[in-house]
Amino acid sequence: MTDLRETGRQATGSAPAAAPDLWQLRFTGPRRLVDTAEPLFDAALSVARVRAGDEPETWTLEALFDGEPVAPPFEAGLAVAARAIGAPAPAVSVERVEQRDWLAENQAGLTGITVGRFRILPEHRSHESTPPHLVRLLVDAGPAFGSGRHETTQGCLRLLEEIAREGRPRRILDLGAGSGILALAAAQLWKRPVVATDVDPVAVRTTRRNAKRNRCLPRIDARSGGGLDPVLRDRRFDLVMANILAGPLAELAPAMRRAVAPRGRLILSGILSGQENRVLCRFRAAGFRLERRLVKGSWSSYRLTIR
Ligand SMILES: C[S@@+](CC[C@H](N)C(=O)[O-])C[C@H]1O[C@@H](n2cnc3c(N)ncnc32)[C@H](O)[C@@H]1O
Image (cartoon, rainbow, N blue to C red; front, side, top):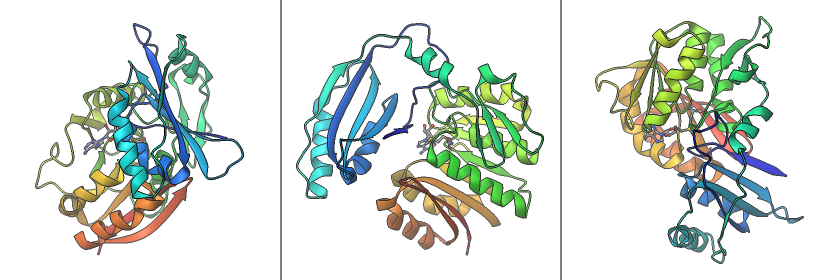
């Protein structure tokens, strides 16, 4: 059983000019350790979690890097994470991966997927027709996160769809846009402008490229920067979507309270089950009320509103 997780950068997208120098770092341990340690591999191209043998609670994490990863910092981080859950520090192995045009192979294998009302197609499938009741999104994530296959992205898309049944937000922010998939979904759903921000300039460029692919470049205002810094401090949004990770989300709670308009909505994702209390406490304390919780795999997504 393989559970491919996109973290920060994913293994899909257009072929790079030069073949990447691929290295795999792997370790095996309790599933809880694999879950909690995943943020350590933020800089990896992709992270896969594979169940180790027949043991349901023993998993292997395989992180793919462009260039040889330096093992000791990962070993130290894993030792701390293991200690926190009373498990032994896992042995870490680092191996070079056989050179193949893996990006092109991956892309060729990518088919369109349907998530609720959204039909997500990679560029090379753009000739495929989309049933009229579905919102078509042409998304090539390239080196950014957001192909539409991850549980967190899908959780956000599902919540977007629910919000669409109730209204049509006017001012929209996608914080941590990655490929821009959520910004595109909102822009196409409501034909409204969307501000899309990301701390990673590669993601900002990818968002712009995807906006162009979907002929909605004028509606997507893609900006570079972390947290709420790239948007005007005094600006309010009727809908904010943020699929980041639990840690940065929790820290953003008070600023989010200022960014969401009085009857506005906030969609959060990127939260593992063991991190839910911490994140929810911070958002409740900041003045939000939980309207809906959606769980997909190990990941939770929330819809919140101002109390
Ligand atoms: C999990 S991806 C989500 C991508 C896309 N929104 C989706 O739902 O598939 C998270 C993105 O947030 C960005 N990010 C992480 N921390 C951030 C922060 N503090 N401010 C802005 N962007 C951030 C990352 O660079 C990454 O592109």
